Image (cartoon, rainbow, N blue to C red):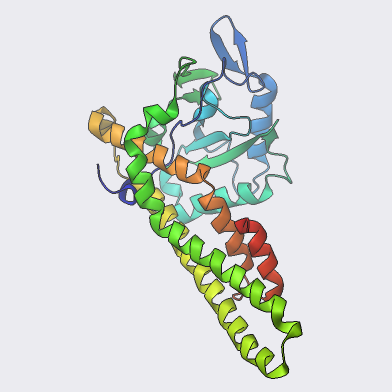
Length: 303
């Protein structure tokens, strides 16, 4: 198996099963599931909120993909809505990214939620990639292109993906080291800052120089974590191109490797690496860490 960060991708199911698909999203008749009409209407309303492009009008197909079409969903799992454009040549990766970012930033404003599920919109320029997912639902025609997937209640994702434990460990090992350094630097800063008032003036001046150095160390730690997350995201994006065509979907080894690598990325996200680094990055937007921000870092890091 190739290095995790050479092949890290987008989608895999790493949760424990529930009895049914989420019945706040799907309505069940006997053993068949169909998208609830009010959820379908909500999806179209969310798509129409995007003013630069009429996403409904330009869509060859509007799909729901991923865990929400299985019984391996979580209560806050996204409803991944993918737009396959009629004219893919009219789209660039930059335009695709701008669309995703807009929906990410305006989710609250446009109420892009069904219960705790956020409707996440993505313009899919590689239509075949969606069919690596465990479920693909055609929203316009209310039909399953793949799935729904219902796994037995004794399904254990940790056992199912036990083969990738070392890959996950290797992928995050360097990040664990930097996070440890950041925790130590924050604790050192707080310790030094706490003793300053009771020290002689000369000693205070010396320790203030050390405090400044600690702030610089903290900035470097966060910048290092930012680069690691940026690298993961870029490799994840490039990884989606590993399977280049519909023909590649017939390659069992390639698909199995894709599945394992996606699961590994999901586990990395579950362990909060991405969330922690994103929150730290927010503090670096002004390009420096101030003394007042150290307490925020402590809270983010749980120290």
